Image (cartoon, rainbow over all chains, first blue to last red; front, side):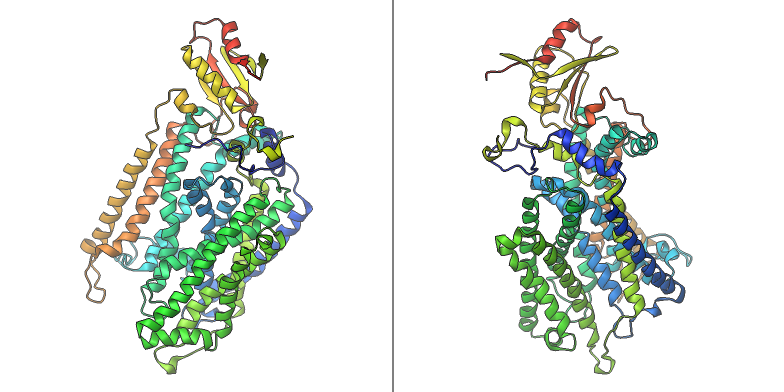
Amino acid sequence: MQHPPSPLRKPLITGKKKMKNVTHDICKHVLQYPHLLWWVALGFALILLLIGGVALLITLWEGIGMWGLNKTIGWAWDITNFVWWVGIGHAGTLISAVLLLFRQKWRMSINRAAEAMTIFAVMCAAIFPLFHMGRVWLGAYWVFPLPNLFGSLWVNFNSPLLWDVFAISTYFTVSLVFWYLGLIPDFATIRDKATKTWVKYIYGVLSFGWDGAARTWARYESVSLILAGLATPLVLSVHTIVSFDFATSVIPGWHTTIFPPYFVAGAIFSGFAMVLTLLIITRKLFKLTHYITLQHIEMMNIIIIVTGSIVGIAYLTELFMAWYSGVEAEQYAFFNRATGPYWWAYWLMMTCNVVSPQLFWFKKIRKSLMATFILSIVVNIGMWFERFVIIVTSLHRDYLPSSWAMFSPTKYDVGVYIFTFGLFFTLFLLFVKFFPVINMAEVKSILKTDSDVHPTQRN
Amino acid sequence: MYTQRSETKTVQHYLLGIFRDESDALRVVKRLRKNHIMIHEVYSPYPIHGLDQLLGYKKSRLPMAAFFFGLLGFFLALVMQYYMLGIDWPMNIGGKDFTPLPTFIPVTFELTVLFAALGMVGIFFLISHLYPFKKPLLFDEGITDDKIVVVINLYENKQPKILLTKMLTSFYDRT
């Protein structure tokens, strides 16, 4: 299935690491007492979680009337945040599934963290649709096809909102299974490295009694490949279905056929940006510079140029189609986006998503950690505004001028958003401490042995 | 010239050949198979490609399991949607068809993938005997770290131990 690394290729893992070093470098963070900075970061994340938690509780207690929605703009921050988080949750499974099918070995040192990020981002996304239903605890009755209290009235399978429930819960489950499957051999490594009995016990339970037998590895490889094959269309389906929430409506600016590919490209774009933001910090804090090298960062930046350019083309196509369709309402919707009261959001989106990734054409910027870090945040600000522009500016000018309105978020809108940040960072910080951040087993398979090193790397 | 690049160890009636390089282990496995020596199992910290063919393991039928579970999910999803919206409680939505196939496709697709993935992984855990609280049978602590261990059951092979040890440890190097 795999081919031995060509001696002409530069090694993906630098620092002439041997298998023993890999085990040591990654396990040490799990087994040691955490760094002071980790505690500081966790404290910060917990404060966000607390502040946001208060806003979420008040929303739950008083109802979603606490949010800034009005009759005209019935969808605003909640769905903007939902789509933004789901979009971010696309990079992990794309890296581990699509790049596995394409045999991109550089994925191996970033897939673990990216998949974790995916799972946490989808959890954050789920907060919004769950809480907008009001009584969260009844959510299961309303979204899943379960017999409910009013006889046998079922959910409506014609609605894209319901498709979304299925798409996101399937995506979450399959991503979680894929992630856990990859973690099993690494949990076994930690189990065998741990010295404390209870640590050994916990990781022993988590590792499912893994022993590294060739027969199990052969099956494991076949399961990984099939899971990657299944997860690939799944990744593409999730944001396609999210885009159906809009595209199947008759609102000008939403009613377009370009939405599925445009949303998928945007999701991968923002997902990679978030992976970069997190990994640039993680590699520094956990001293993983030999594992997540500048080469990895450059590769991700190239994906950002590609997907960012697809998003740019989609924006221009939308404008062209609005003009070419001859539909007045459609034309107005786009004219209003660029020149109406929300012009600043539109141009912020254009600058962040279309112009800023083009800077990565310069090798110097592509290889600069600082520039990449800043641009990765800029991209995610842009992607948040993209959803805001699509949702709010399309709704705020209704067919009836008498119902035209503006949207302003309340502190509860902002608070719930802060809550998801708190949740995301808390979970990610717990992950980097208690889980192996890098897939040790896979990285060991791409280490070069003495006989096949690149000519420039030889002693 | 002959060099020693591996070591051996005996655990009960098992003879272990311990390697640090994948190519050495592969060469030894090839040699053992050629001499019709039964290999109990090979343990490694990462998947070694081509090892399963060398050991004569049959190709896994797990992809087939995935296919059939997927098929099950596909039919269950369609039956569920047709039953709920077509038979049990037809809903009139703007006078449209009660059971339009195109709008059933997304949910059908998702459930196909869900069943295929969960079913296949479930079967994988089942046939590989992987479950929480299982005590692993480790011949060497280094298997999950940096050692590739070839295990030979001495009861299964007639050859003397000294010969097997030699087969596990000697390498011919041209350099």
